[in-house]
Length: 178
Image (cartoon, rainbow, N blue to C red; front, side):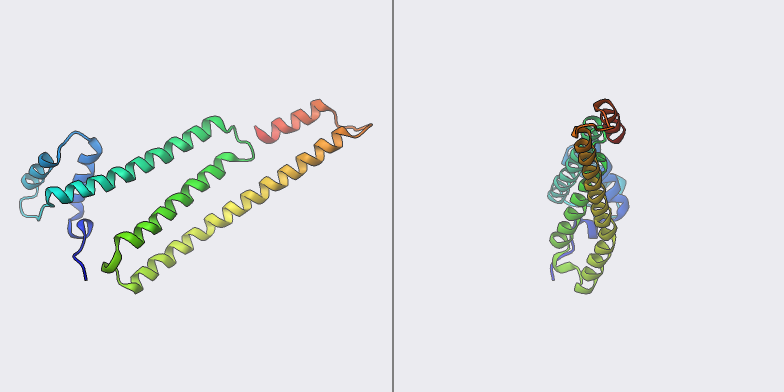
């Protein structure tokens, strides 16, 4: 069995300090290591290389979170709420994060994680994913129903002698799409 990784060996208090300092982005690896040695003299402080690897992983995660946040913001600003596009985008972002977490579970824990514990974690993830999938399916069903009803209204408006005029149809669309 391999050696435990950085996060398993490093106390939570030290990890929190490292994450905070990396988040600030104002410190070099050597400065951070010296700071940790001064703040936590009785603890085993990670090597410069371990700090660098952890910083890269943390940076990738922060970049992914920033990208997801920016995507959600752009969708919110530009989507209006055409067929509830924001909810669909939010669902997609959550699904992406869950997929990423499952991939991380498979890669990071490797041989250190007991197979029974791995199954438990995957089972928990599956139970938490199920409502998200139901939500996504319900949203798609609702979107299809709205499209079908709108198409029926448009067809009815085009028939000769229709009681639904173009102005009323426009008002219905504005009501539906916000």
